[in-house]
Length: 378
Image (cartoon, rainbow, N blue to C red; front, side, top):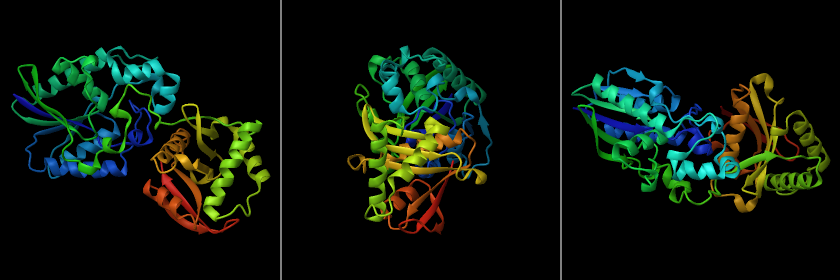
């Protein structure tokens, strides 16, 4: 008999940015690294003979928790990858809910019948993961093994082993949650599954609401659509947001020149409509994200000109999704980092950016006050 600890990866950028990961290769977040520490503590006194993971970065890094203090190689295999999401890969969940409502409902509540162009089927994932687990068990008969995979892949596998269908409403496992399997003669049994007792307040799910009722539309996942600054309505919304951002940073609108910033926005949108975006929750306007593809280009950086949420949407953990949108945009261009300026007087914004990985590079002069130049790696 082979004992297998089946583990979901730690929190990665897709979980934080609220974007479909699938085969999209996002990095582990700061919280994810703390989850990995907690996972390592959980396994420090458990005998492990071998460690396997998918070949994606978030599982490889998570597997490092099990390798701590053990002189073992890591066996990587694409057979343990997450379900391939086809045209959904890397897209914001808010956009998918808005544009693909029926399929989004199936993904959360009826995964057996979910399909979008280019996606992998439920049956294919179940065969793939089950075959991988059985192969690992055969290679390690009589041993104890740790296997690191992905949330939906693990859920689909467990549904097969436990004889469940979508009607049984099996929950998704938290980041670094652990399931204990026993494999004997090709038969798989489950001692427990999706246990996250080692996390405590580090739980990803404790900070999110989407999983609590998957039959309702998740209004906390945002979407983005181009803002056309040559249209009166869009121009007025853009200036309203930029002016308020200026007042929050400097205490008044002294130094704010509408024509200058509207002209800059029109220039950015003319180069690429996707660089100037309305931030939306369903059909509700939430804020603005403005990106500059030229500024910082020589240093391999992208520039965030404006990252703004309306006052009523602040303080709800939504701002990170704007950072995620910028990271996806500039990452697709091969930029190594993102930069922005923050007024030295804007303590709340400075704390927000530092919390999500930006660091101060230097202090620069500004129109109304000095500014910190801040940078975040992509």
